[in-house]
Each structure stands twice: as C-alpha cells, then as structure tokens.
Length: 368
Image 1 (cartoon, rainbow, N blue to C red):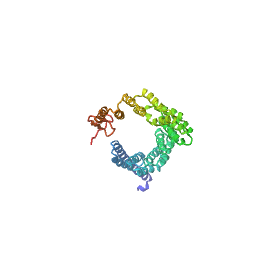
Image 2: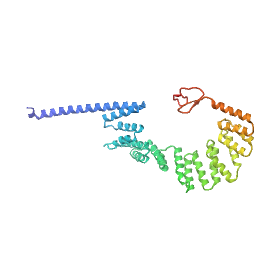
Image 3: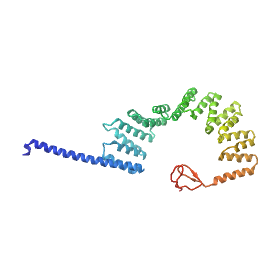
Image 4: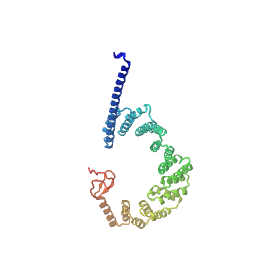
C-alpha cells in the first residue's frame, strides 16, 4: 500500500506543494501584471486630463496589487486634485500603517499628506508632515514646500531658514527678511532697519526693503534719513516711484522745502523721460504755481503718448481756453477707444485683426 511507503508520500506532498506554489505564483503574477496594466492606463488618463478615468484605473490597480504603494499614493494625489481632501488623506494615512516601509517610501507618503492638509488650509498639520519628510529624506522640493507652509503660517524666520538650507532664491529670502522686520517697526525701528539691511545684502534691488527703511527712520522723526531712502527708490527705480512720491512730497512739505520735488522730478526725467507718473507730478507742481504753459510743455515733451498723458493735455488746453485743440485731442482719444479689438480670453493680448490662435500665449481664442 502507498501508506506503507513514506518516500512516495513525501514525493506526492512535494509535487502538490510545487503545483500549489506554481499556481499561487502564476495567480499573483497575473494579478500584478493586471495591476501594472491598470496603473499605466491610469497614468495615461492623467496625461490626457481625464481624472475620472484615472481614479477608476488607479483604484483598480491598487486592489489588484496591494503590495505596491505607488498606486495608492497616486490615487490619493489625484483625489486631492479633485478636491476630495478627506478621502485623499484617508488613502495616504492608511499607507503609514504598513509594515516594512523604506525611509524614502515613508518620506513620499508624508509629502503627499503635507499636500493634502495644505490643500484644505490646515498648514499646521501640513508642517508636521513635511517636517517628517525632511527628517526621513531631505531634498530641495521638501524644503521649498516647507518654506511655503511657513509663509502661510507667517513664520518668516523659519521660512528663511528652510530656503537657506538649499541655497534658495535670494530675492525671495530678502522679502522674508522684510516681512520679519515688520513686527519691530513700532517698538524697535532700529532692529527693523538692521533686518532690512540684511535683506539688501541678499538682494541689492529689494525696493520693499528700501521703502521700509525709510518708513522706520520716519517713525523716529528722522525725516532726512527717510528721504535718502525714498529718493533712492524714485531715482534708481522710476517705474516704482509712485510707491514713494506721496511720502517724499509730504516730507518736503514738512521741511518747508517746496521746490525740491520739482528739482527731483526734473532730475529723474533726464534718465527716464518715459516715466508717466513723474511727468504728471511735475505738471501738477507747475499747475499749482499757476504756470499752465510749463505744465502743458512738460506733458507735450513726453516721448510716449499714454491715455493719462492725453487726458492731461486735454485738461491743460481747456485751462488755457484752447477749446478747439482740446476737442481735437478728445476726438483722437475717442477714435482710438472706438477701434475694435479682439482680446485673447487667456492672456489679454489685443489685436485689431481677427486671430484664431493667440500669437502671445498660443491658446485657441474662442470668441463666444
């Protein structure tokens, strides 16, 4: 009898075990390959911006191969982009309970969770998870995202430190310094200026820092020191001069030095004749002095012709009782305004000619 031959029984058992193992391997491989196929289809759907199909395929891939976390990660990420923040968090949190996760896998999960919480506005929780990701696997993206989270929490010193660790954009880091200085303006203007000058070491063209230094001096009634910084902005960055013109004129008035504004504006126009705001301010000064001819001459000397300058010409011609000239200028403006313009709905590009595809942003221009 067979039962009397243990060798035969062992051989039969091994054959059955081999068949079972082969069947299990074949089934698992089949499920894995099916999962891979669904995963690829999900990726293709993402590329095609078909997010509903992407979610369907990724869910299917995840159920067919539960050992692979990438399907679940991507599924959660797509759900977040769809606005399903709670479901996205649940999917990603479930991955953290898995055993034998590698450090880089854990870091990737925490990144996704940080994005989930940030998307719903919970930046404190986002900070917890991006900090975990940085501890597990520090990389440039994580530090940049951490800086963004700190921004939303208005933790400017911490945001600065995050970018400093990766040699981040010094212009952005300078602006962090400007924001950091704000809390000292009222109680410690000197400390605020120290921080603001650190910003200028990072970015010598940081105009907000220059303006703020002037503000800090002005808060201590050091008007001439304030003027130096505001005038620097007006002269060196005339396109941004409107940010400081009221401040400058106010201090000139307080000091009783009424003609300094005219002298300053004349100086700026020598190097930046196209500066509309400076030219209009200068014309206003002449107007207050009763010198309408000088005001109009100043406007007429502009190398460019903007709407604001055209209106100023009309105004000064009316003040001189030159109604015919004023009417002609007004008619010119109306004719310009009445010209039909095709406007790109995407970038605002304008043209007097019909265009089907925007030459600026290259989007198709659907008219209605």
